[in-house]
Length: 350
Ligand SMILES: Cc1ncc(COP(=O)(O)O)c(C=O)c1O
Image (spheres, rainbow, N blue to C red):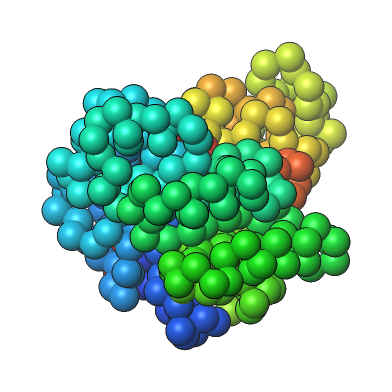
């Protein structure tokens, strides 16, 4: 598979980041977010290798079923919950814990005689995405009709310490849940790192496990969890004045050499990259030139002694994913979870 891009997944790095999340919040249980193929890090390969995980978090029932089929024994929380009676039944059969966030789901629970099913109840404290309003939430809790084993909410600006909405959401959550005697969960990575009062009974780290900062800034103690490399397919000389690739948008200012790498936007590498977007090749940063194509992109390697089949790092240990993401106006979440299936994942014990 040497002509494929490879994402090396650093299992020990992820374990280190997980232990760091735990150390930030020693009295909470830890739900590791592995939705979106573990943000691109091979959910099924990773789940059995991680230690000290109290539960896994996925977005969809289907992801939870895949984890169970893989032999995962821990609780699995399904953030979207079920959306029809088949999914509700699947949750029951596979012992998945759905999040319940809508009246539609409460009706399904009642209609299917499933009020005893353990569920996490989602309260909307200001994100205004999924969850019950404070009034509806209180009515559900007061009714005592459902088997609520945890209450969760989600912060809309946790990574931005200066944002005034954080304290509003924190106060509302505390006020509405304080005397219920039901476990609570509020903190994603940004909140684990920045808002100790949000930790409660369950923390829900995602992006920090994967070594990327929720705010696209460098966090000293996190370790990179993915190194994405692509093979050199060809090295060619270009003369001053010649153009490279589709649209000829880059013209060589002088005689140089171009390495063609086997990675493109069909692998999830962004098509829109700025001038001077670096890759790490042969111990140096060298710029991508011309348009990124579906399966290839070109790098101006000048005099570097590059040979076919050596590999360039697109992001990882030498070139932080957050830096690459910032250069394309994106975030580490998008780049890593956007890698497509044809990027080979290789889990390594480092
Ligand atoms: C409800 C919920 N909890 C936790 C997380 C994890 O967030 P992060 O990756 O920022 O840690 C997410 C991510 O989207 C989420 O939607």
